Image 1 (cartoon, rainbow, N blue to C red):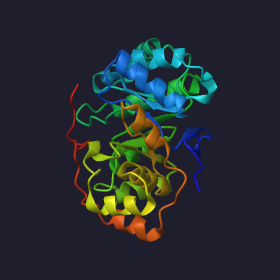
Image 2 (image 1 turned 120 degrees about the horizontal axis):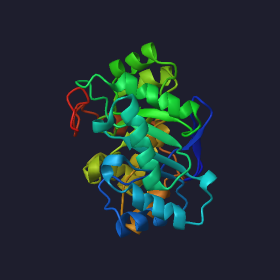
Image 3 (image 1 turned 180 degrees about the vertical axis):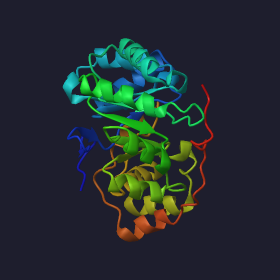
Image 4 (image 1 turned 60 degrees about the vertical axis):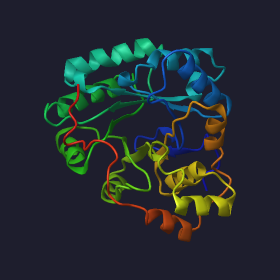
Length: 279
């Protein structure tokens, strides 16, 4: 059983990645994100997930710099935005993210969306391969990539993605994609694991939460871990950040896992990656 907030999975290149991290989507740059990241680090989180488009990389970097956690214990992720697809533009965007974060190296760099209408994600991926080979990032991956996007990278590039971060929650558990990623050694990671709070009053999950004397958020995070999916719940409230970290002292039975799996409707809350090309 995964033992605690600093427990890790091992990516296909041997790099260890925490099972649970703090997501900072829609967390305001400045005091809000600095406080959230510091609160998370204080209760034991070691993985922080941001993105260029979030506009809070500087605040994340400030919190890291002001914390007492050694850099080598941290796992920092950021993502390339859609407007920067392309080989050279990716390299420039990476440098800008690193400047804002104030880091010498990154733990995980992701292509945020495939943007298929641009037709550039293969050359973009080759830029990530260069950053990886140059030792500037410890692992590279993608976000919101469907099976056919991943197949295209595998067929045309040297290095398989180590991570695929996607919309993943009990209402949308992406079974086929999960099976594909497992087959190819690509770690699936959940964004919006709580469906932006939309599942916190789901009766089935509430019933299970009462059984284990846990919150519904803790039940969903535990379900993620037991399905082999890394998860990055977002919160700016210190007690919620701490609560989400406390999802490791129990294990869901297979019966309860099956009840949660049965909630799947295969319906996205957010954009279909084949259609989302916003820059």
